[in-house]
Length: 423
Ligand SMILES: [Mn+2]
Image (cartoon, rainbow, N blue to C red):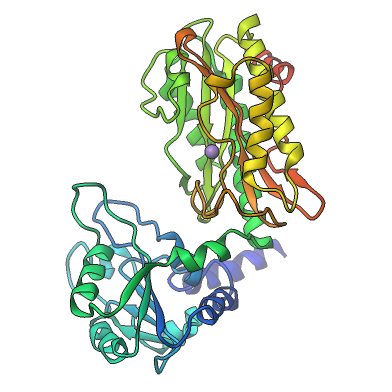
């Protein structure tokens, strides 16, 4: 029986690798239709996918993946109510020649034509060289173009999307170009059941990797060893990559919010702050734990830690539909201020979580079921080189909230017990 199933899987495998999407084509079609319904006839949306870079692992851009599910470089998606075909995917022609970018080297790809239309559910799959003509035919009717542009680093080379944006702007100055996020933020802020399950799994992976690493931490180790253990824990559970650079900061580095060099040797008596998140199928977790390097909190560390934990619990209790992130932040801030640490809480308590670690959404938005946020108060005392942050991932539900990372040890007792068991 199992052998027969395996045989069927082996037969199916070659068929599915080149073309299959992670979900069925309708899943993405519904998203494109919603975007289409937000546009009037004088508007269009242009979404470039990520460009291919040699010797770099490809990762699709979030919005392109959100609307297509396609993991392939150098694509363009045009959605325009006034166009003959209201959704067109532009793809490079098949590259079958020799060379490092050929499909013989990089694997077979989707190309223009009906096979791609079938495989992706996108109405029209055209050769990328025809984009300019197609856009020129439409441009006269357009007032506004929503464009998704992730700028390259400051002073660095321009991204392919930037070059495209400048070309369109130069050629069609009458078209106002607006960020696509104006339309997509309101879609991406609400997670459907597939997205919630994916985030929950990314959270589980992150928590399990953290538990393993915390159990192995001891004085004398280097921060990068902790980072390596955590990221190994992600990979061996199927995470494709960390969702953001892992932070493993000890002693003085616990007070640097986005420290990610992770080169320092950890000394006895110090704290270690780990702020990490596994990415799974384009969704990331974001969890922070702070632990004593030698397994026991000092009295002072415990005092600060329990204040942060109390602030976090107060903030989580506030989370429910109708509340804003400002109110969540106020609840955490009040606890920290009452304990006399007000000036040492130097960042915001929450952000939205999803495909981006700092996902779309405003602080004034009223929470609704299906939103996922972090709750992460902290206290950072530079003169004592003592920083504590505790971060969990919280789903807003009909009645309140569910802490997706609730199984990750978080109290002083739980952490000390876990560290005793590891040695
Ligand atoms: Mn965070």
